[in-house]
Image (cartoon, rainbow, N blue to C red; front, side, top):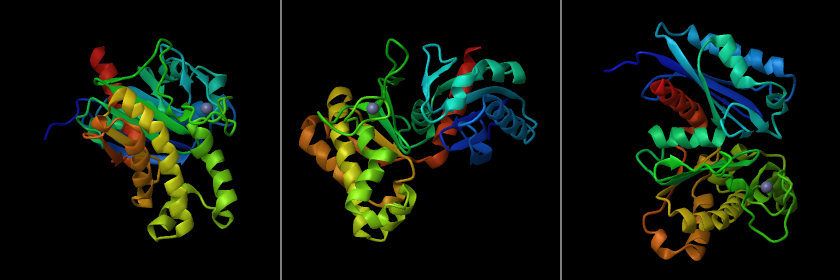
Amino acid sequence: MPTSEFNVVGLDIGGTRLKAALVSFDGSLTGNFSEASRVRGEYNALLEQILNAIERLQSLSDIPLKAIGLGVAGLLDKDRRNIIASPNCIAFLKGSLVADLEFNTGLPVVMDNDANMFAVGEGFIGAAQGSDNFIAITLGTGVGGAIVSGGRLVRGIDGGGGEIGHIPISIQGPVCGCGSNGCLESYIGRTGLRSYIFKKHPFSAEFGLRKLALMAKENNLHAIDVFRYIGRMLGIGLAGLVNIFNPEIIVIGGGISASGPYLYEAALEEISKRAFKVYQTNLRLKSSALGSMAGVVGAGRCAFEEKGRN
Ligand SMILES: [Zn+2]
């Protein structure tokens, strides 16, 4: 069995969790862990947390560490060195994370949006493995998205794009965190979903998505309705993307895979009503295969690619 000549560290930092692991060339993980992320306070506390994570992982292997891959919940500048907006992680904006990590570790750091890292991970060894045309969506606090077309991540003139959560799906609609209204995220992001559940199923309002997923699996009708609702709204947004990108696979991640078929059935129903029939023949909706560590695998993969270029 071939072994890595070197390892990288993959990090995935979101509004609530920091996930990290040593990543090998084949995407296998060592020492993976998840802890509360220090993204809402001071920058130095966050930097210290990341450096500790790297040091901890480095001590687990004799194979040299050569690069760091970092997925973050935020918008990046064009050369992906700085985070320019991150409503849930204000600490990111108070310092220069890539420069500071490179200075402190002496290693190259490659950073990208967390949804892009999720897509890279799923495309490498996950639910979209081998596909050159797929769409990746993560459901959580927000609705993250990434689009791979012709084997490449879609990036626009400013290095961005793929913001599936901010596709407008209604003329009017709830105010969205981005400042617009009627975006997909304003319906099925955490805030929008809470207000739907509170209105329709007040008894379930205290439960998170993971708990509701388990309830749906046990045939709780309130929980089933919630997942049908998410699927319906998602399907409306996705139908447009199916027509534009003609994808082979749509990967959905974010702790809903335990909810059973309801979300997927409702999404497919909307897509089948709204998208070109010919584009539905080869289309499959799939759950994330790598679960909560998909972003870490993707960050590791990007770090390997970066190192390969050096
Ligand atoms: Zn929006």
